[in-house]
Image 1: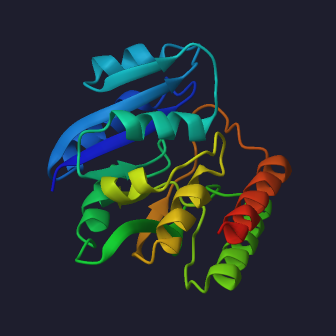
Image 2: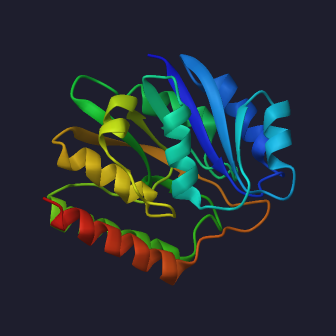
Amino acid sequence: MNVSVILAAYNEAGTIERVVRGCATHTPGLCEVIVVDDGSRDGTGELAEAAGAKVERFAKNRGKGAAVRRGIELARGDVLLFLDADGQDDPREIPALLGAFEPGVDMVVGSRFLGRFGEGAITPLNRAGNQLLTGVVNALFRAHLTDTQAGFRAVRKAAAERARLSADRYDIEVDLLLSVLRSGARVVEVPVSRARRDYGASSLHSFRDGTRILLRILRKRLEG
């Protein structure tokens, strides 16, 4: 198994070196760490490069989904592993995700709800929103998942390339997940932890992005 780690990063200078090095240390079969610098203004790209990552730079901020899609295009591995560049995901848990691949499994999701949230790792509003959106996915797609919005996940590259992704923002997670589910492949979850963010601020807007994610789910359900 050859693994490409893909990190979409926007103004994550305080954490990017630690995350890149953690991925390099804890990823079995690693062939590359790709950081897509989404128009950062704080030197994120330079720090990622110094830590050993291959860096693709956007001249301006285009959104997490656009950065993830570009990372998929550049990746050489037959398995793609995604985690957040803000330090909230723990690279030491990467082997658990990769170890869950077996014949017929195209995606492994790191579920924070099966695992645990550290103190302050998620707001009550975002927790409720995540659970609501997951309930909608399970109802519309006959799935049995616990964390459809998790950014910590791994997918076979062939499945990602078949997905024909179009999301530019935080709806990229359901865009990819639902494409895999609709293909008939298995998606499994493993428990992971989620730490409190200790640098910078998230650019996720609960209501605006939550609405965008919900609309993406409904569009995917209506696709032929």
